[in-house]
Length: 160
Image 1: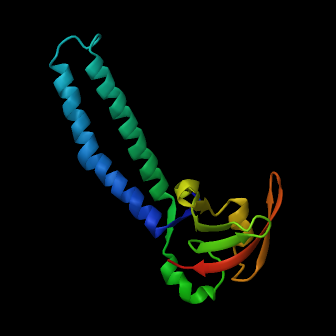
Image 2 (image 1 turned 45 degrees about the vertical axis):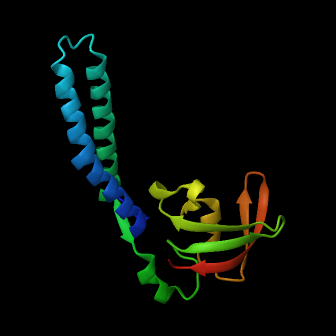
């Protein structure tokens, strides 16, 4: 099995979610199913069916998180910073300037499973991350996008 890179922050967040699902959500659902069973006929018991559906969702999420964590190669970017020499590496937070629009953007390069554009976390496999990796501050980067090339200047590289 091939390992997938994941930041320490992403692995910790998944571990926290997994613990909550196992120690809080799973027992709560088990109790809800037991309570619903006490109400009699299960064929027409909406509470029972809803609780069983919730149980399936929780168990599915537990399996998904366990699978992701089992294949994760956890990388702590703060420990790699000393050898990065100012270059963009996996886990780095990069501030870029769109040359055409003067828009400043900050992205953290993370693993596929933790990418979340709403929180400015982009997958290491995304076109912009692939273009940034190995570059450093003041470099110019051209990203091939569906609507045409985008020209960025790298303003800052951080390992936080």
